[in-house]
Amino acid sequence: MTDPALHPFAKGHGAENDFVILPDPDGRLTLTPAEVVRLCDRRTGLGADGVLRAVRCAAEPEAVALKEAEWFMDYRNADGTLGAMCGNGLRLLARYLVDAGLHRPGALLLATRAGTRRVHVPDHTGPVTIDMGRPRLSGADGIQVTAAGRTWPAVQVDMGNPHAVVFLEDTALAGDLRTAPTVTPAAAYPHGATVNFVATRGPHHLELRVHERGVGETRACGTGACAAVAAARAHQPSPPLAVDYTADLPGGRLHIVVRPNGAIDLTGPAVITAQGTVRLTQPSNSGLPAGSGTWAQRGSGESGTGPFRGSRAEHAQG
Image (cartoon, rainbow, N blue to C red):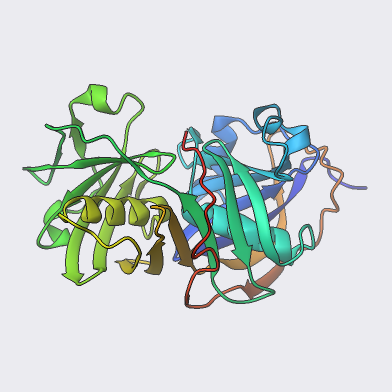
């Protein structure tokens, strides 16, 4: 007899920024903040930086208006709070949908709380690319970040989620980041911010450490890498219209292409490492087969030129 409390899951990462994926195509799963915290716990749960619930837009009230996309990424931070956008998570979700046979390889349009995003997924292996849209810089003065007993000026960037970008000579100056950096004035970020500590390592080459809102320091952050590139270009008097950047983070390397229209493509690895079933507090009525649990290593790879170069599409940020 099938245990209704068992629900299928997949585990994977993008540059070691790791997630639990819960397929819920018909929107039947009740996912509470406490359940997310339990799943993300690295000692008593599956362990992750966040949870990605994969639900069809037609079955999710938040995504019904985004009907041009079939699938919605219901992203939850490790502390149980809702997240609008996650670059590494969206790449991983796209890889999962293709590997699970829920979408063909190639071009996908996925919905998030920050709007729709175009994704390109190769068949089986290789890096995944997202059209992240145009960054929004507030131009606000007086934003500061304090960490490790020191305070620095910061640049406010919106990549569908809020970022504060700090430029340092060495990212080690940020300290251990076990304590969340303080961002002021608080009114500039009413819902908190992801803080990116950035060091320039060469022309179009950045190194980052990131303290993610609702998670803590993570091994990589896709939206953070894009925000860092946007902030770096804002410091240039006449930045080129199109340019490729490399971003190195503790968990790996991401590639960012700034297109002539200002939109950003993010390319990086997306690797499914495990699949199985997990016992949820709320019984699952997903209708999906429970499965027996398998280990895999699908979808790794370094990136090349993004497939969206020259595209005129733009996406609203939210």
